[in-house]
Amino acid sequence: MTPALLVLEDGRVFHGAAYGATGETFGEMVFNTGMTGYQETLTDPSYARQIVAMTSPHIGNTGINTEDPESKRIQVAGYVVREPARVASNWRATGSLGSALRDQGIVGIAIPGTRALTRHLRDRGAMRAAIFSGPDALAPGEDALLERVRQSPSMEGADLARDVSAAEPYVVQAQGEKRYTVAAVDLGIKSMTPYRMSERGCEVHVLPAGSTAEDILALNPDGVFFSNGPGDPAAAGYAVDALRGVLDAGKPFFGICFGNQIFGRALGLGTYKLRFGHRGINQPVQDRATGKVDVSAHNHGFAVDAPTDGPFDTPYGRAEVSHVNLNDGCVEGLRLLDRPAFSVQYHPEAAAGPHDASGLFDRFCDLMEASK
Image (tube, rainbow, N blue to C red):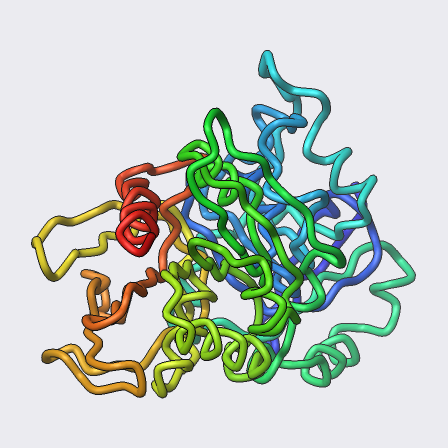
């Protein structure tokens, strides 16, 4: 067993054993409450530069496979579990989780105190952290390692969308008859998102994060989509500018997660960092128009600051908060009342689930149909 340390910026240290690759890694320490879907979590680009702790005690039981990844590689900066599976067993498995972490150089740690870690983060908030494993990484001592954590970059002000975005455009073909052309700006898109649109007859043109409004509109799309992604939306002014050009052109718009935050900033609203964020597959979100509550998947550390007491004015007409989180009341959706544009903070494409909100893709299609 190779010794390892998890060092938090407030001085809390957790001792454990190396899991995955050995060495060192730095990132923002967060936790995920999902009991399933660890492979989807690991490969979600929204987790770039984050060390993710899983609150579910057993991780790796079903191994990994080639069908479930949300991107081409593991995206997390580091991984914290309580008890790694000793044996991977599933009819779709092509390998073990530990081997995948080692092969891709992802430094992890197994600690007996994931519950204590989660409670600590719930009290103190998400913070900078690092995992160190192996004699060479641990040699400087805990005080020196803590100082290195405190010198590492913060998530606030981090522009990460361009780091995880596709370098070149690509197309996901419609399944069956093509009904719509969608321009999807990849701010850290998950593979399931264009797939959900392709199921509905959309030919999805995925564009790099730095694409301008001119790049997007040159496709003459029936609708425009802005994806999820990592980092601080306040640092992604290029995406805000592009979206404003799309809204000026009157194209139907749909945004998810980071795309919701970019939409809010395009409307002139602010964004702020949540204390510990929402990450998991059990968040209750209410549609304020219908009262319907969806159990939803989340992965975000920032939120939109918008008035929830009724419609408000924007440069694009009236807007309103469409959805709220029933746990803490934060904004979970926005929509324009005078133009075909809306967004949500959660993940209707969620894999491995839940699928309560998958109908939002149908709503996007309805907007594109009405605008033809």
